Image (tube, rainbow, N blue to C red):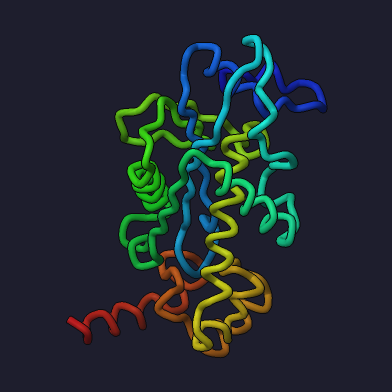
Length: 233
């Protein structure tokens, strides 16, 4: 249970509860971190780290002037609205950084470690060193204070901003991939294991951007991938 769970017993969620707590303790640069693509069969896991301008008014409420309204978990927002919010977030952000770890590395070190690697590198890519990291239920090996928040993209404004940035960046990547990958309909499914995607994998086999450590690809195509890697070596 995270430190502010008692504040979320009602249906009204204060998305600034964590930010207000740490601002009141003197933290200035509060960084939200979130990932997208962790459960995909195809493509990278992408992480965004975002530091938004935040300050308290009379040590009670967050000053609304630089706040991007309507920020929420990216999965709950339409693609069109995400694009609108993305532009507002990156324009208002003090700084932000995006980092992706490819499918080959995911297969080599597993998705959990790949996600942590992307998070650490996203933080290191920031122009400002954060005073604290707000993260959705992950602990990073980095010398910066951290607060792990279950369902953080729903509970925290900063993580919500990061969620939107990561989602838009990865979606654009999927949309812009060449035709050899679009036969898997990745512009539509974004690499997730939809029926349409699974049908394409059965028809064409798995590509070099698929995750061979993920089922059902692991059981059906991992031997072919190993043979191909051996030929390259």
